[in-house]
Length: 377
Image 1 (cartoon, helix red, strand yellow):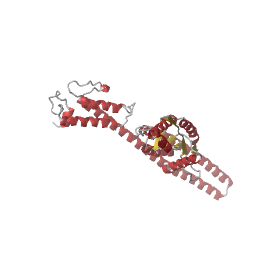
Image 2 (cartoon, rainbow, N blue to C red):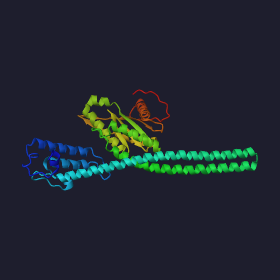
Image 3 (cartoon, rainbow, N blue to C red):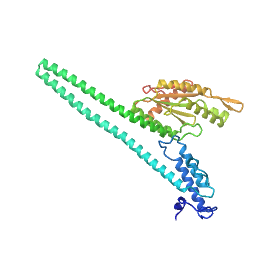
Image 4 (cartoon, one colour):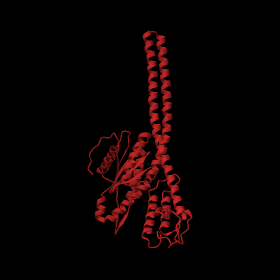
């Protein structure tokens, strides 16, 4: 019997099995490897629709891992602690087999859903092309009829042809408009569902350990997704670039511990200011943060920014006998359909430089059509 078969079978009593007996190097190594694999499965699992909390499954895996290691109880599955060295191998095997099958079904369903969205989009574009051809044919026939009437020189025929052409064109365009609107509504519903999936996926992104904001990698992924959704749904997206004013002096004068406390406090202010589930707050690098605010135009974003700036001004970090205060400068802009990630980020950066050049502790907005000027940081 090989090692895997022995692990998943009902073991003998403790002390009688050379594989799992005390002091067995092979047995201890096998149990350690299995428990580590169980923890990896928990930490790297897919978040299923039935998972009310993404932390639940990893916690269950930790319970099973401890059960493998030392026979601890698995309270989530009513498995009591082992008193004689036995393990509930069949329960462990069945639990992870069922989970793996559920994850496979989940991934298959999601892939089919995304392919369906792409297929719908391609079909819609093809239908639009065919309808445009039909519309062009109808209009061309109407124009030919008018030309024939004009050639005849008979005023009543010209009037009749003109009236018929105008009426037919109006009816054609009205029908086409209704069909477009219907397809757009259906596509928007599909894309809204897709966006909810993207928000769920965003929850799995890595966070910055110091500030609890998302990290730069999460931002890079999120800005691409946001621009794609903006292009498809034609809904506003605002981007904020935030830089702490004179942060280097905080580290120099009060130490990096105080600087870290300031960064944590700013992260908390951001979390309290941009509270919607689809807002993405990220630590862009060093003392710079970035915020992606979907479904929000520049005017609405300005109100949120002013509230955040006031919250930052109120930050007080105690460093020995002194109180450290800080402020921030913010540049923000609103996406347009022609934007790329580079153009959008550069424009927000340009607005940030402008806010600093105007005296810091304030915000500046640059629209897509605003001429760019060079500013000193």
